[in-house]
Image (cartoon, rainbow, N blue to C red; front, side):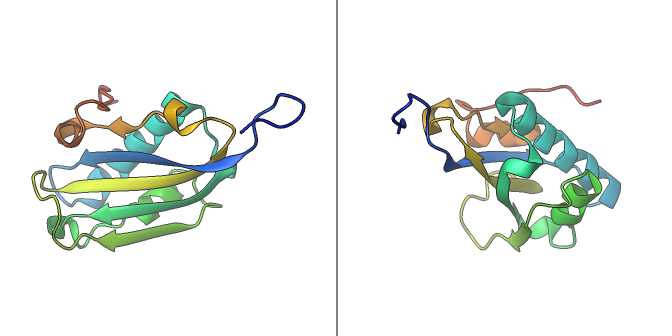
Length: 134
């Protein structure tokens, strides 16, 4: 929706992403979450200050992991964070961390770029974002 001066109104848009980890070592989870958030920021140009909230979901194998703590350690300290364990649903990808980022932006939903990394790329091959690990 455009305003009277031709500028777009700000709306809260959903940005999806997912990644996988080989184990539940906290450092590996930290690296995977950082990589995923960096990919979303890189693809969209968003800033944590414009993010309304982040929700992480974890597959059963990662019940002891804490992606919210990993996000905070990566600088996302001012963003409300939530993590929940997945119950049923798509179990094609084990050790999967998914994220829904709610972003206040003037971009349209069609302009949003999602990030599906590592083995999670099979979840949405049409949206997969391949990056090499640091």
